Length: 307
Image (cartoon, rainbow, N blue to C red; front, side, top):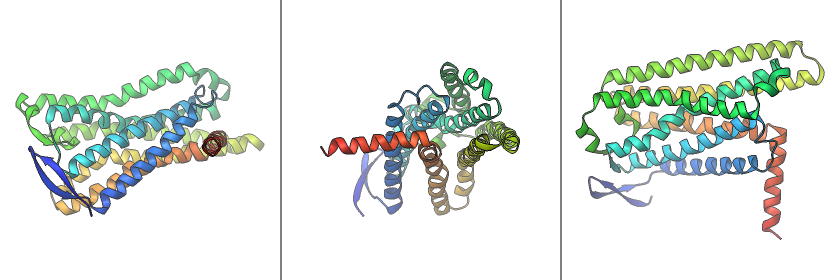
């Protein structure tokens, strides 16, 4: 264990880094490195940034990377009890509040793209053109900003001006001053959960019908698309459970603080880090075109370093 210092209320207090913090830092660095490698591969071939499925995949990688980076900073702030003025903390927390929703909404859009590709192949080029995909990215961020705006509005409506000048440990929990704020936030997230689940189930059922009716190479392609939708569904479920984690943690904290720490650590690993490692698996390794491009890019980079 290494000794470190944290700034609390203008002074320094010694604090040791435990094994859990080290494990989280290692996992975050690994996932960020993999995502960076995949993003660099994405820009190496024109067929990737002119295809809807790969563009949305890149959006997922970038949003996951930004969320991992910012959430890790907040985790370090919380662990070392590093305090900020509340107004500055609000600005810092806007990014994780937004991008915690961007990923599941993007996954839903990717599922719809697979539905159009398999169930409406003749209209896929029209509906999933590069221009429409760029518009969909704006729509995704617009829809994802609604829960963040709701949280900020409830905070602005309930907090006095003096509250923003206070020094506090920066975390999203400071946004909830009253129980009714948690209820509103929970209602918005549950509405999003319901809508996205309906879209996933609808797409799965439709693709299943096409898979049963297809034959030959079309059947293999359709079943592969069906497995992709299933993986999206599992990844989306983990992301949506993450939206409920703050409410679970708040309830556990009132019972036992040590149990709250353990639950918070488990939730971060299971529902924040784990879903972010599935995106590289679904499109980075399972997709033959992207996998070959990644393999060639890594091999070429290794060759350049060794000549």
